[in-house]
Length: 142
Picture 1 (cartoon, rainbow, N blue to C red):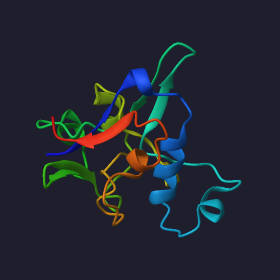
Picture 2 (cartoon, rainbow, N blue to C red):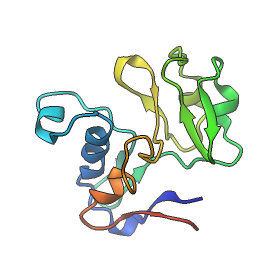
Picture 3 (cartoon, rainbow, N blue to C red):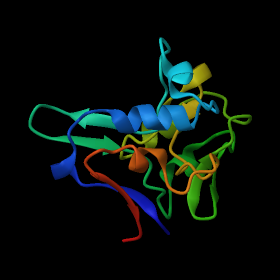
């Protein structure tokens, strides 16, 4: 299965992946209208310092701890990727606490949020990959 991978040596720490992710998941057609003056809730996050930066997103584990920890059954595996059903999420954050990679976060409306590879957004590949100016983020099978 294809997944998002980050080449840390190429990451500039520009955060464009975060903005492209938030826009892709906004459901709007215009990026300026979708994001201007609003708090964004991307499903990928850039961490680092002035020496090295890296983007963190869901690794879609084969045996995900987050799915096991989800008390409401909102997290589930669908076609090899870990997905979240926002209608079932109760905001307990047990998935956020147990993820060893820090891939889940608190999203809009206080519910858990995570990368679903933009497959629900009619994109050919994840928006973070398309929006990375330095090609530090790739979508490939390894």
